[in-house]
Length: 167
Image (tube, rainbow, N blue to C red; front, side):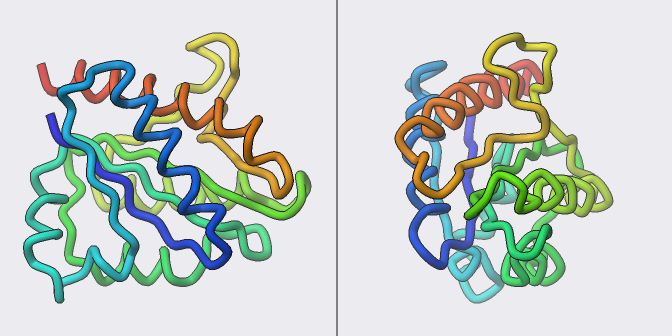
């Protein structure tokens, strides 16, 4: 099975959360191929990267929260990448400066756009028990080490759900 993480990172925090996501995915199944791409690497200018993304069972999108929404770079990527989402499991995570900064809204916006493009949204929600990850994991500035555990668990759960869809 193939999974991917596509993100934009201005400060490095959004990029740093790729590692615990990948570790969580591999703790579920070490044979899963996981590749990471910045939004700039996942464009029509990089057909080999788009081919890999098209072949994936699931894609997790990462965005910093900008004014209670996703960053414009992620929105632009979703709108212009040419990637086909129908039937793919899609998830999202966000990073932010403040707990009341709107990261949950940023995740909602990205998931809504991916659903409109045919993706099958995954959140985990409260159904998986503790820790509760309602729409997707969020990393707050200054809490990177402790928030990384949520990303690890989300990676495990995302991989498990993607595996169920592949069967």
